Image (cartoon, rainbow, N blue to C red; front, side, top):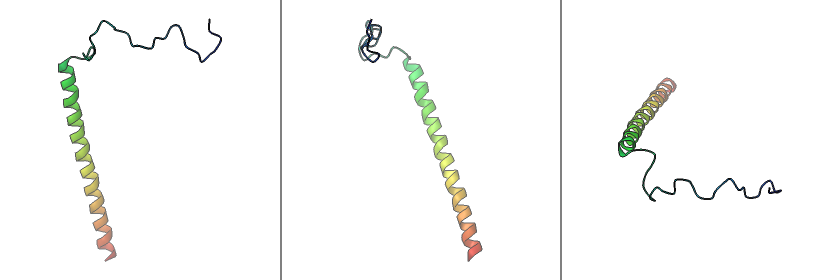
Length: 71
């Protein structure tokens, strides 16, 4: 047993498991699942842009109201 608490452990390996999988090949998600993730990301990005434009428009309207009330 290793007396150093921060020393290397015999139970933790430096390389990830699944050595039988070819390198560079995705093993967790199918190409269809990856495409659905990409599609969902594009949709979420579009929603974020629309929300940011709405916030900007509301801020611009409030600024113009304050400007109009001061003038």
